[in-house]
Image (cartoon, rainbow, N blue to C red; front, side, top):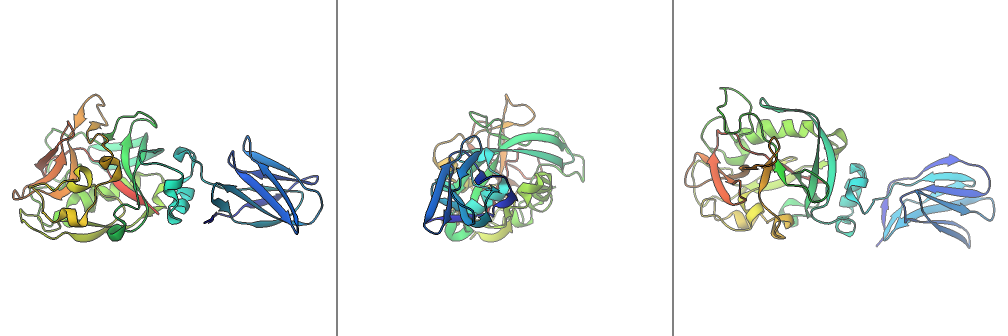
Length: 337
C-alpha cells in the first residue's frame, strides 16, 4: 500500500522542463490525461522533458512510499521530501511521518543511528555544550499492545558505525553529592518508595535531558505509556502500573529479557525486551567522560526486597543493583511517532 508524505513546494522555471529536487533513486512521474513522463533522480534531481504545456500531476516515489500529488503548470521546479534509507540523512519530521505510517522497518533497521547535538544542564554535575552524539533504534512498535506504535530509540553511541554504546556520566559518579544537588541518580535518599512514578530521575532529570535535545527532535517525541513497579519500598509481587513519559530509562526486563528474582515477578507480563538487546547486542555501556571505562547504568525497576536500591547494569553488562541516592550512568529511551 502506498503511503503519502509531505507536500511538494512549487516554483516557476523556464522551458518545457519539469525539475524535481528529490532524494537519489526516486522515480518522478508526471501525467496529463493519457500522457505520462517518468524519470529517476540522480545527484538530487530528476529532469523531465514535458511534451506539451498544461497542468501536469506530479509525484515522486521510493519503493512503496509516494509523495503527495501536486498539480503544476510547466515549466516548474518541484521539491519533494522523502525518507532516505540512511537514517542519519532523514529529518526527524520525516522519521515521524514514516513512523506514523508504520513503515519504519521498510527503511531502517534496529541499531541504525542518527546524530544529535545536545545543549543544556542535565544535572548539577553535567552541562552539555554543543555535545555531539548518536541515538539509535532499539525497536519498532515496541510492546505495541501496551505502549502503542512508534520507533523506539536509545542514547547513546560514539559513532554511526562500530561506535561504542555509552551513557551520560556526571561529576558525581563515584563521588559524594552535595546536599540538595540534582544528580544523575534515582532519588536524593536511599529509597525506592513510589517506584519510577515518584522518583527524582523521572520528575527532575528526565525533563532536563529532554530540554537538552535538539528542538526538531523534541517536537516529534511521543508520550508513551510505560509500565513499572510504581510501589517500590521493597514490596514484592507488585503489579506494574502505567505512567506517560516522553523520556525514560528501561526496566530490567526490557534489557535482559528475563525475570530477576530482585524485581516484581510480574514485570515480564507488562514489559517486553527491546529488539536491540534481544538480538544479542552488548548490554555494557561506556562512560561518556571516560570512554575506555565501562559504567554502571540505571534501570527504572525498583530492587526487591531491598527498598533502598534500583536495578542497574554493571560495567561488564551484567544485572546488578545500586543505591538510589548514588549517581550512575543514564541511557535514556524515547519513541518518535
